[in-house]
Amino acid sequence: MRKSVLLGLLIALVVAALLSPFACPYPDGLERVAEDKGFLDLAEGKELIHVPMPDYKFPGVSNEGLATSLSGIIGTALVFGVMYFLGRALAGTRRLTSSSSMQGKEERRE
Amino acid sequence: MVHIPDGFLDPKVWVGASALSAGALAGALAQTRKALEERQVPVLGVMGAFIFAAQMVNFPVAGGTSGHLLGATLATLLLGPWSAMLVMTAVLVIQMLFFYDGGLTALGANVLNMAVIAPWVAYGVYRSITGLFRGNTSRVVAIFLASWVSVVAAALACSLELAFSGTVPLGVVLPAMMGWHALIGIGEGVITVVAVSFIFRAIGVEQPGQRHFLAGEKK
Image 1 (tube, helix red, strand yellow):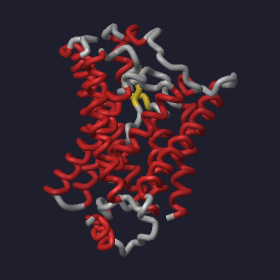
Image 2: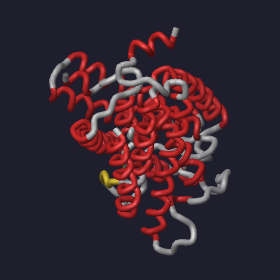
Image 3: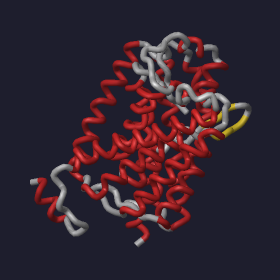
Image 4: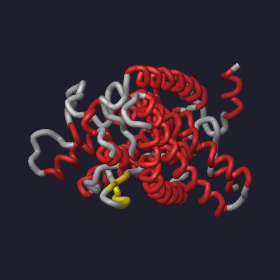
């Protein structure tokens, strides 16, 4: 299990770091529709928050591919971290269960 | 995909969507708390990490338009719909807070479309098809169709939200959104089928509370 978790995380980081710079630059589905149907301008100037890496570009890096890679690595790590700690909090009391604990789980629920 | 930015939705729509999403997420938290075991926790993290990374990699579909993996079906098949909701929400929140992909006011609507509707639609389609037809081929077909329908359903919900907001008439936005996302959904289906087969061959995952949702049917 440990090993497959590391493998999975590695795959995610490789995708974020190495594939993201080669992402297709065309507008995506909604953006394209907004453009074609003339409501894309509704989103312009409506920025409500300042974010660290707008448009998936790490700030201050002139190489676009590298800027995208870095933001991808950071975002991937952030999501892993958030989900890991949320999961830990939710699983909290279930520390000692093993694979033979389906019955035990039912009991705890009572 | 269908990450709605700020400015596209009017207050009644984004407040309403946020309320629905909040209710659904409360359910997802409660259900996941019941079923999740500690040793499964890292898998949630990896799933979220992979979906975030994959969403960055747009693929061209046609006519100068691109799409990317949504991942709701992948997460649902591997983790079950309740945990999938949480994983998709975590991805959307990080995307909004750090990259401003999807708006702040639109977060509730984006969660509703991609983290609530998409996983449950995928779950329903997958369960229906595998309930009716047995065997490996039908499982692959079920995964593909669940993926495709999840993307189209999210796009449908997005279209309705835009129309209810008075941003664009439904008759205008719906055909355009359906057309593009029918194409993007094919990419979703192919990637999800490949990813699920790879994961079950190479790794094997059990989902919280309901072990071997996919793998169990094989045995």
